Image (cartoon, rainbow, N blue to C red):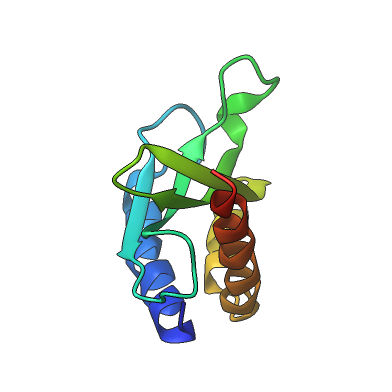
Amino acid sequence: MESHDISELINDLIPKVESSVPETGDFTQVYSEYKNKDRSLCLTDVMLKVEPLPKHIEDYGNYRYLTCVGYKLPAPIKSSCILLKGNKAEILKLLHDESLVERMKSVIRNLSDNLKDV
């Protein structure tokens, strides 16, 4: 995946997080998706999402997960990686951090490798 594609994925997610993710409490996940065009990767789609923590985790209402997910469609197969467990401000700070693009390149390669064996 190109840096430009990852930047678009991140930039599409930022306003969704700003408007739809509360500081505390439960919420419906927000996400941005991208159709992969890089034939060297063994995944068809990439999703970047912010989701609530499971309710059985202590203090779940104060934290969120920023997760990157790779899909191998049409089979319902996916591989995911939590990039950050943090509050809304921490997630937005990471989304605005330019180093996230390079980190996600590595994560996406790893997700693709995980899907090769499936």
